[in-house]
Length: 170
Picture 1 (cartoon, rainbow, N blue to C red):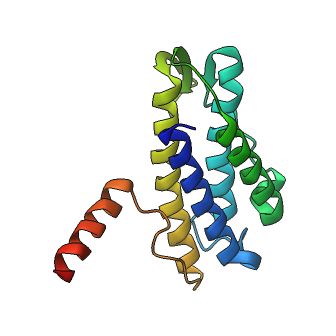
Picture 2: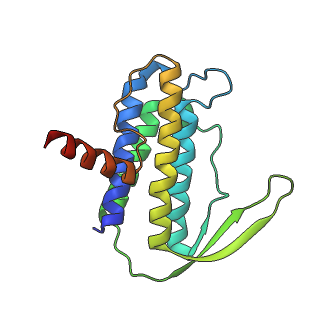
């Protein structure tokens, strides 16, 4: 398993940690903020796009499952996450070009197709997921839920914090 796959598994485990903190508040919205369930579904949509895209050499991030059961049912979401963890654990690939398709305009339906690679998209999944984990953690906190400090922290921020703590201890 590559470092990119392992890092994605770490991020998905953070998502499980967050879901388990929220239980009955998983699908609760507090004002205009998206629910933890909505952020979870959005994260999973991106992983599924990559998983599907590997088979046909084209990742299409427009493929979404809005209003799905995983937005409202934490157990279904956890099951989906665990399936993705198994997939990442067993993912064997050779570096090769892959097409990327995504909408780029909010004013009109406009898609862009670009050259990418599976490695680049696995890296994107890490950053994209952490970004949404941070928002989901914030949504949980607005509901009064205590969230572990490691959830939604960027790798470079985690490294900074580790190095900073080490210097304080000396």
